[in-house]
Image (cartoon, rainbow, N blue to C red; front, side, top):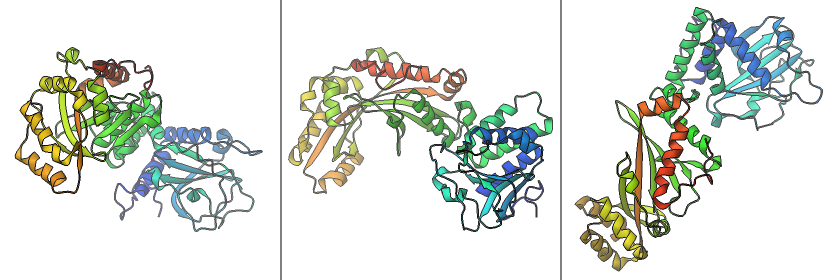
Length: 427
């Protein structure tokens, strides 16, 4: 049965199965010449020959016509050349493994044959974490001894493929039925493989949390001087590491409810004792934030061995900030017998307050354990919220990165750290 016949879908595999994605894309290539030609050109552009290998010639191969098949096990291959193709969600061009012949029983996700000239065998892995490079090795079975196997594979990204398809929708030469096919394919990807979207702007993410987070990740990568400094904190979100003593992490955190989404630029100073001493001894000034959209967020907590245990609420950020500026020398680890008095003083000074729930957590996390000390961490956060409409409009104009850097500078200015060239690129 021809699975690329539009009316013969897989019955036993759900829509999010990678075989369904392969089939859907190959159906598109079968019925849309525009999509097919840009795919072939993409393969050619990403292929690097070795030694005396003949470069892939699109015009030469197209003269022979072509045939597209999917999920073929050990088919007979008698063409002059064979090239292996990997399609996945990440750029794996740096993997320069040599394609070899394999003794395995191969089942090729896709096969495109150009007469007697060239065979393209396609391996589709929507998640690069599932890539096994030996799957790019063609099977020796039913392969002609005269077929020259290219030593390098072509490694393609779904992101780029989807970009190209979106571009096709804007061209005037595309027919109406091809446009419908491409739009249907992109809608299928949106619904079943949303993480493969190109994330070129927040509007394209369509409110999908995974897409929004990927776009946030890409935004931070685009402004960071060192991409290795952009990391993910489970339970919080993506952040960029700073070189400053007062603050080590600046987060760009997605928030979402049933109706809308928004992003918080989160700067939390003094997350540890050492950071807190450095922060409050700098005499932070937040006056320039008071009339803006920034929120001031006291975040006192106790920790043990770099693990945060209990957080305490505060009612007045001004009292909180003033107290620690005046008493930053008293930020220190407390022995077990001193913890209660230390915390009670903070309550008396109206720096923090207790609830029954917090007391229960403190009992559970500390007093009922064998811990003999607690670290006192008078963290202080400032948060700027970007609304979804504000973000989408700014990102469409290519200005969101600039707005983000401006706000980061504005936030760091409370301790005179608004010179961000050390870790952020100028945009």
